[in-house]
Image (cartoon, rainbow over all chains, first blue to last red):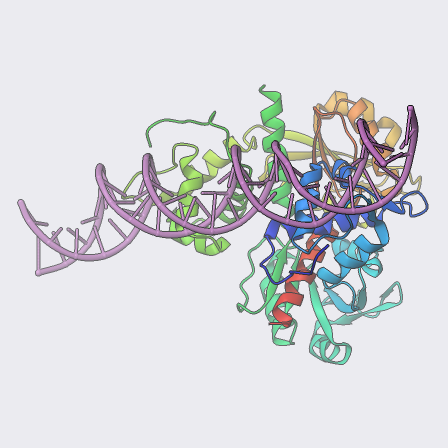
Length: 215
Length: 215
DNA sequence: TAACTTATGTTAATATATTAACAAAGGAGA
DNA sequence: TCTCCTTTGTTAATATATTAACATAAGTTA
């Protein structure tokens, strides 16, 4: 490792893989894996070792020639790059099945994310609590966003309400949206939106299935 | 349009975008949009018009020079390419919040997919029904897969059970897995696995947020 | 010590993906 | 009819991503 050269514009695909590496490493039993090679890590994700090393190289590398990577160093380094080293707060809008599934998602803590609010319009849900987080009416979103310094808003509402929800979150000051509705939400250019368009994954699965069936 | 040249190895990214185009088109009000230009379609997804045309070109094109695309033709063509023209059956394993969210997912029908089974190990869930689909014990998976000719299995179980569930689905004859657990599931090479590793999306969101914050 | 093995970092070569440029085709209006 | 505008299909140019090749470093064994 010579020097950090983080400002050299990191490829988009490298960031996605970095997240996959971190996800993979975090699931490893730490007693067994104190160290890991690019070969081992690659095989767990279905990549080639040289891809792993090339990705790491964009950040100056995480190891030293001859040695294998120290898992702790990898995790720490990647968390820093991905902005997961400082704790961030998030809220979930829409407390249907999907919203509740996400509210119970244990990985948030591992990623340094704290769920600080649940919101819905349904009066029967408002007042409930999931894992000690109260369900509030969406009217309270602006206040909570400010008081809790929320940086990420999760859109788990029905499709019809998704755009309005996004507008509300943005006007409340949130710059990061995690969208689970199927629509393409319109936002100002300084807002980051991460879409989880589930049907896209399902359709590509269908395509690949068709391919192997007809070969 | 000269001729279909589908056998020319379609780029992976083109298939993903094809799914996004179809998703976008299916959400359009059909009275208003009988036709659409590459420019309009591209802007709705945040792409350039030339990208849309290049993607379509891999299949010989969907229109005619001078005319805009007919939305019906686009949808029909893409459904055929993605293997959504013939109806496929799927089952969901794991009827927690996520499983129930997916079971209520209305888009399945639009994609020609029919939910024919829900499975769980929890005796309190077995016997219930969601949208007229009974929840059965996972022991019944092999029988149902055969009798209903199931082609896609959805893994919505806790992480600990994900690999076992996958093994069971594969041994029952399923070749397509849609995995919502965070782990990288091991399967024979002739099985297609589509991972929805939600934390990856969340991490890339965190990264982008960090970028705009520090600029 | 020397030869061999395994490992990472780095650069070069290849492959893939995106964007630009332009010909061909239709519609609208003078 | 002629010109202008818009559109798709197609090819060429550019940009990005992946893979291969190799130098360097550490550990191991004869």
